[in-house]
Image: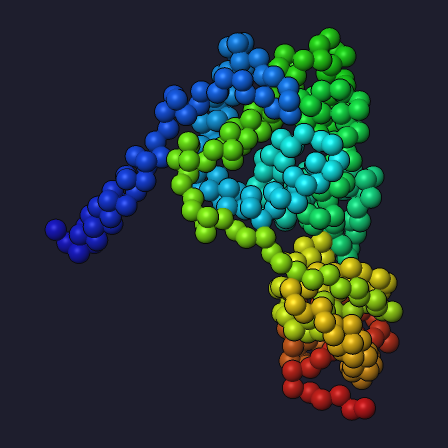
Length: 364
């Protein structure tokens, strides 16, 4: 047996030893997919006495349980995000089961996105987000922020429920759009979600929520044994007021908070790019860093503005972004960030660019 074959044999043996016990423990069975008696969603009964309804539920239950790594991840995230969602739903008078919608939409990931353009915990489309008070532009996308997007999602769900008077239909409309659902109800002459022929994703939607509800409510029953320390803790933070008379780099917020850029971006997932726009902002900073923040930030902004005025390069004939970057020994990407421009930006003689050179010192 040559060396390559021996290595392959050893690798396969290792897989058998490591993987088979896990697979055996996580083995799916018919019992795993059986709906418990009296299972309801948002207070509404589910007609499991209809065979097609039971089959649709069992399919989603088994498919969800099969993707165990993904399930484990969103289970671990529930302790970080669900308390705020549940509190918000309770204050708005919505069923607590609505919290499972955020799991099937985004797996509780702030930057989750769809090919159609839905973004964030609640997968809101840009026009829907703006309709319910969220900002979506080049500087911010508030759909990515749990604390900002949850009230908007709740308002949207309330409007849908006022129209359809059923939570199953509300969820269907949330998924496929209210006009599309209204059209199908009119054409098919039934307003029973379980009897409507809808887009395939929408037909699965309610059953996916039912599966998530059962697993989150009793993880151990479905083979997910998590100790208290396995769950992700809520992230602590302070909130500070930030007033800018001009665009300012997010890195200045980080410096004023004695933090680093990534911390500020993670605490404020709605911030896009590297700058905050001029105006008033309420931003989150690491817990314990609010004291003295305002003074430190104002000092940093003043120094930044003064330094920036000495970092101006006037574009000459024949210049391009790449030649300017090469001339000053800086990455092209950095040049784009400093000037908030795209790589396709056309330069003209006399244009002014901000550059923080790697080796050349500007004359004052």
